[in-house]
Amino acid sequence: MAAVAKSGTPSLSTRNPCPGHYVGSNLLAGAALSAGDPCYIGSTGTVLRSIGTTANAAAKVDGWAAGAAASGEAVTLLTDVEFHWGAALTPGGRLYLSLTAGTLDTAASAGGTAPIAKAIDTTRIRVWASTY
Image 1 (tube, helix red, strand yellow):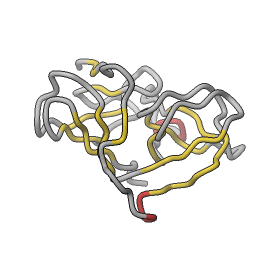
Image 2 (tube, one colour):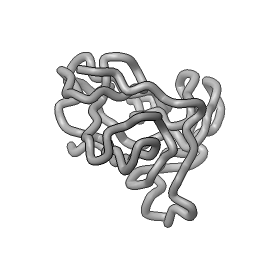
Image 3 (cartoon, helix red, strand yellow):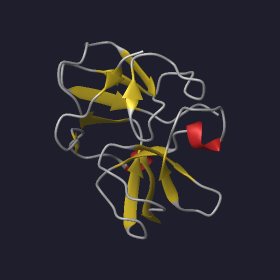
Image 4 (tube, helix red, strand yellow):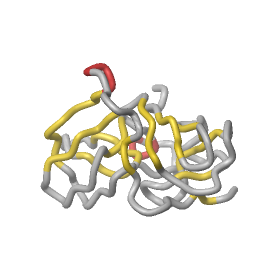
């Protein structure tokens, strides 16, 4: 396993996401979120960062935070889009949910057993939601 660090502040690389890429907008953050965080919608309806420590609801990825949001602020989740996300990524490499909330790893974790992103080039990733 090798953690994949964000490089700066991730930003959306897909120019004009179509309506089908939106999981939801004006959802409420249940904790502080950063742009590019993989997230799930919790049982209270708030958005939280996904984490791969165990195979439970928190290990699912419903979408990716389009921008930063403080707890209680509105956040938009997207899926099937590209983000400027890292540095020195391996093109074609599959990325998995990490043991640290909101981050990625090069290998599967206990809760993140399927890939949720793919490196497009050395700085961009293509992201998708978990399969349920």
